[in-house]
Length: 415
Image (tube, rainbow, N blue to C red; front, side, top):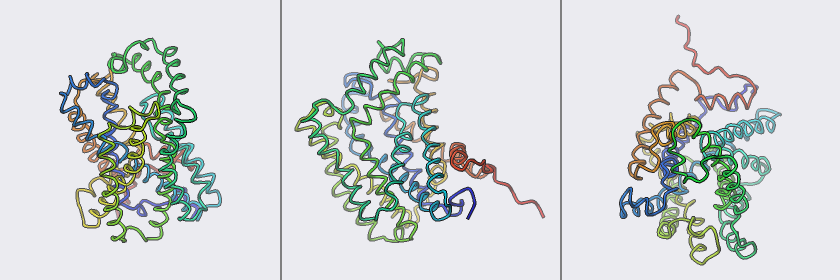
């Protein structure tokens, strides 16, 4: 009861590890559009690189199947993890709130370092900050949590209208102006395009790029209404975490089937509309009828389709899908593998490495992402055969409990 950790390795639900592993693949597939520099290119440049029709098909498939869906699953799993951690700590330790707070602060430090010195697309900082809301909601009933989750997930629709009518400019407009001014002050390469900056050789150019671009993450999060959506998914994850701990979810096949069917019925048509409009980006700067349709399609369609993905994987797991079990080692080291995505893709696309930014078509980037995750699965399996945690997980655990848990698996002495 007084052990430093909330759960032993044997208590881990392997299905959640496998879902994390699959979510890592989906997250990387979506993030490749940024890692490769694709999103920084004009439509003419994209057509010249990949061909006009392949470029359009790639954009459509990205918004239909990837954009937001796997970050939904990833956010949901983080919410489940935070909720289960808080429930177990509360049952075992009188200082549960302090330990949980240290856990979030540890993740915040990791996220800030990742955001400011490695990659602009960091999500860990936001997860750590929103994780504190679960402390406020820990005594809420499942019904209250569910209602709050639905309200938060749908909040971008009325917020888009009201903000456009009352304010006019997007929520992140002031942050964008500040980020542009900061880039002009901080980087000697501010006159270059982002793709050109990414390809500049040497560590000095990389330093200038990463230090200049990170403030743009703030308006990106604000303009996409990411905060209420992640908060809603965390609340939904808390409900799921409680059902998991009570043993009333994974064996409920009818419920999983309903989530799958309803998620597809709602999610696919909404995402077809969303993909045909080309995402939220073209409409986030001002209020318009088309922008409202895109906002509704995103709010209504992305989370149900993401939940359908998770339910389908859970049903496949129950039917003994061996390929899904192979993702579990990578999922056990999800934090390490997520951070390694940024390191590896930096070596591939930035100028201090191969400098391939703006030179790969989406299908080539997605193929690279698939190969990277396969390699991570193999490396994670080999690592976990010798060590109890991934390197980043071990550091996070140390920050949480203030003690260095033995990392290497100690073999029993020979008789």
